[in-house]
Length: 203
Image (cartoon, rainbow, N blue to C red):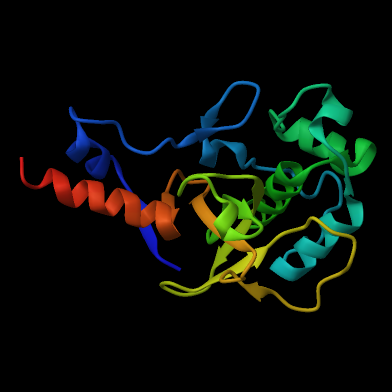
């Protein structure tokens, strides 16, 4: 998977000609992708899972997939804070992919895992993508090497026996972020911005 770590220096290099890629997402109140990962009090709700596959299965078992429109009455809704996430896990349970992704990322982050990322991408036939940044799905990535990633997608109702590599035919990861603010562009989105950065060197 082609990956480009995005930094302030890279954004500054593009200015004043054009801004960098959009790093803010979510609704209501868009914010940097990394800010949608929350620090949870795992002891408070006796959340004992720590290993990535156990966290993934924990969220799979608690989640009932439903659209944001059906649950929240709006087309897109992300958990605004840790209390929203607790409320979903242990009471409401109905929500969509961004809810499960926020839950997996927040639990692993709160357990001390610095290599988990909240990821956005396209799920389906890549030929249906309208642009390198066309997104329709949220999930998590777990970095396991310099360029190796595992895929953590808790949407579904079957327990997982192992973690799949991120290079799956139906997944095209576009952007990912860790809770500490680091952010990465992936695949054709990374190539697109790498070319733009390269072209700016002539000025």
